[in-house]
Length: 103
Image (cartoon, rainbow, N blue to C red; front, top):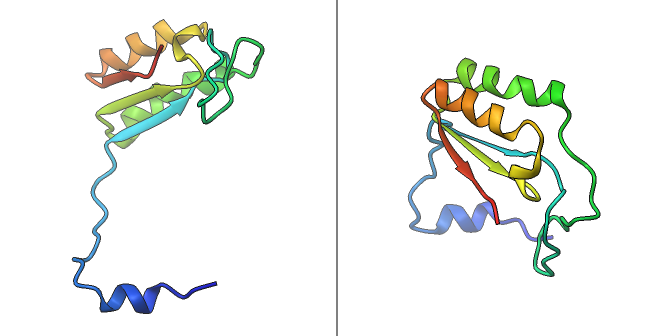
């Protein structure tokens, strides 16, 4: 394995600084209405794994506690989750921007 740190120290690249976290990306599950060969999570109609209601209910709390401004929903097809609409409503009520990575 190569030790890249010495190489990076020799480059003229500026230091990488971590910015404030403003986005929470959440995968609501692997169920999807399509079976795309290029899907990086192998989602599809036969997948049944979905985030449970208890975990889903924590998302608005995390958004508020961390002062996050964007909720990025992904999956599978996040809109197929039974709690999708309520989650979006709760996030929007907090003024959080919602990204829905849907079909």
